[in-house]
Structures are given as C-alpha cells and as structure tokens.
Image (cartoon, rainbow, N blue to C red):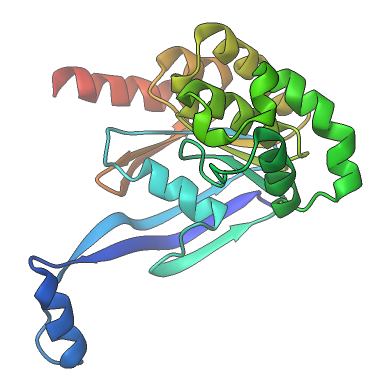
Length: 243
C-alpha cells in the first residue's frame, strides 16, 4: 500500500474582478459567470511509496505548498481523489496551528493532542520536545512573543516527536539558524531510516540532494516530471538557469 496517492487531483479558486461580482453570481445562479477560475494544481496523478523521501520542486507559484496542504487535509480537492495512509505530521506555514496567546508548553499539548496523542503520551515526550526546540525559558511564555526562528524550532520539535508515519515539511527550515537546520536534517535522516515517509519542499539544492529518493517537478500547477531525484533536479536546474 502506498503512503500517498493522488488520482487526477485539481484545486481551483474562483477569482472576481470586483467584490460586487461575487454577489451578482450568488443572486443569479446558473446564469452568466462573473468569475474566472485559477488552477493552483491541475490533474495531478502520482503515488508516494511508504518510507520514501519525496521532494517537490518548482518555482514560486507552481503549486508545491498547495500539494502539501492537500496531503495534510488542510485543503480539499476541487476534483479527483486523494488517499493518505498513516498519521500525518505537517510543518507547513510558520506557526500554523499555534495559538499566539498560549504558551509554548500549552501549544505543545494542544498540537500533539490534535495529532492523536493522549496526555500521558505527551507527558512522556514533552522533555524531548522541549530539549529539541532549545528555546529556554520562552517555552513558558506566549508564542506571540517568539521570534520566527523560535516558532520554527518549537513547531519542528512537535512535528517530529509525535511518531508520524507521513511527515510534511514546507521550506519552514529556511527560517532557522544554520546549527538548528543541521540538527533538523539529522533528525530527518533518522526518521527516513525508521521508515517514515517524508514529503519535502525546499529550494535548497544540497538538502534535496542529501535526502531525496524521488522528485516531482511542478510548473504552474501541472506535473512536468516525476522520477529519480538527480534526473528531475538536473532537468529543473537546466530550465531555471536558461530561463
């Protein structure tokens, strides 16, 4: 059984030129359309094997983050079907899922419980999460007082310590300092060795080359290439250098 399967998945949004156009369309259903469709991703079909490190590459606006949000269940497809097998832990938008008024400690318990852990399970993991985040006394302060780097540290510490079967990482590590990024990459290697499926979006050539098994190249929401990491990245690098 694959960890993730996309079958002809599309995600589109209705764009209106003027706020009043939305109201016109609501008041005249079935008549003239007052919007145009923007396709964030279009007709994507691919599968990710269990234990695979799957990298998604593409320029800004290519649909990489949308694809991760569809896997996480944050977004629902406009058409097509998605199958995800296993507990998903996601490190997507900076601080997504954190309540800024809560302390770091409270947010650890909140996020871990949302991911399905009992209080006793979180109690056992809490010290490991706190130590990995390495934010000191800030763990007891409201998240709204954190720097962006502190938020990433805490979010990553939670994401990797809830026993995920599918881990999603979306360029958030770029915010952290170099030493923390190295620690995170070591942890990603450990998870890979344990058979965790990892879906990874990054603009870092070295990160992708170091951990990737396979890559998907997206361009304006469409799949251009799906294959071995070196083949896809060579093609993608050649395109961006000559563009």
